[in-house]
Image (tube, rainbow, N blue to C red; front, side):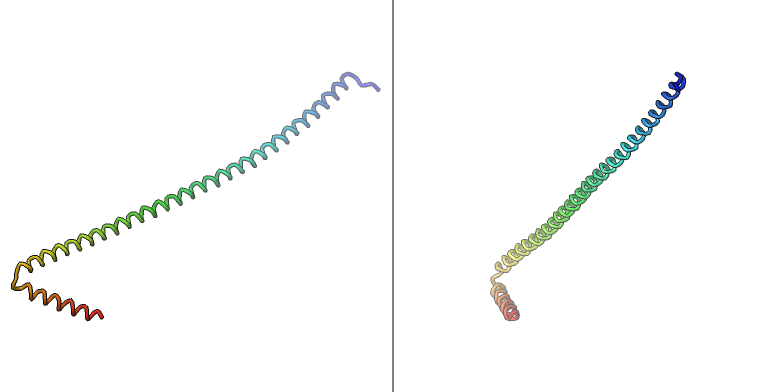
Length: 131
């Protein structure tokens, strides 16, 4: 039994439809696989960049914290220096005041010997009380 041209054309069209359907399914399969691989790679890259960003900001936080500690230390040192300067100024003022008073006492020859005895007595008493 011989096939007519119409039957041959029909079979060819049927085979072409089948091949085209298979090709479309293969294209969909390739597209699906490519999309899946793309999403996996995109997720990996996003996660990698997220980790890098988090590390960057952690490093910045540590730098800020260290900078704050340095500033606090500098402020504390400045305050200590002010206290030491004020203390030094007070000691200098006391020394100058003592010199001035001693100069005034030394000018008075009548009271000077009794003042010296009183100072010696007071210092001796302090010395013996410390022991």
